[in-house]
Length: 157
Image (tube, rainbow, N blue to C red; front, side, top):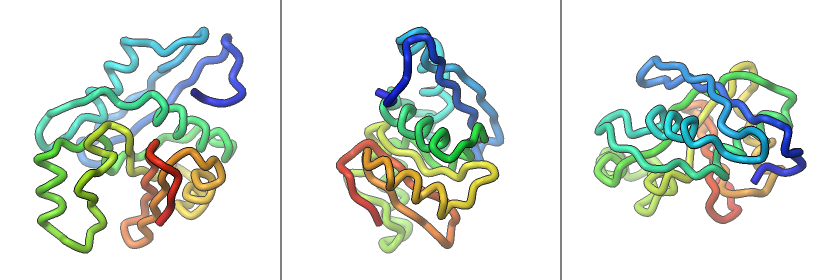
């Protein structure tokens, strides 16, 4: 759960999916609870765009990216590179390039990872903010200009 929030607060995120061109602005938590209809919208939005498969996205992941953005003083839109990946998609990406960094047991397959850019924020700053929170894995992909965040064990690459 997001740290330091009072029950009256609301948490809102804005997304732009770089592969589908779709946008989503959503309040996913309000009055002390997650909003089921908003979580359903997020699950669809962050589904595997290749297969259409979806999974329940970890609410802790949403809180993580919310808190990272807040720690930067931003209310910008997250540009989604990758979120949920079906096992089929994950294996296809692994086979495509052995050096790509696609893990066999990827947190993406569990709905616990997201690859993003944050509008108006250099990816190095986004990476550093995520690392400071110490709430999961953080990967930095300089050539592709995105940051991976997940709610697995704390680690970085």
